[in-house]
Length: 89
Ligand SMILES: [Zn+2]
Figure 1: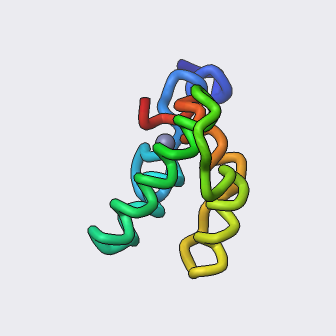
Figure 2: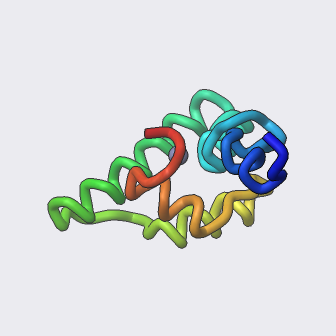
């Protein structure tokens, strides 16, 4: 293929750390216990959005909380992950 744009479009985007969602990368930096707690919060936010059940954190709040604890996660990445619009699904 001689068109560099077409060639680039035909290939998966190269990312450091493989083809994983940013939230998945952040989860990998956590201990098992921390990961379970983060997963519980993510589930809680999903349930909140689906059923209006109480939630301790918002998606943005969770991203900010992780950032404050040295786990870099982009707000939009967290939003996409919770809405299942990321590469995990
Ligand atoms: Zn994800």
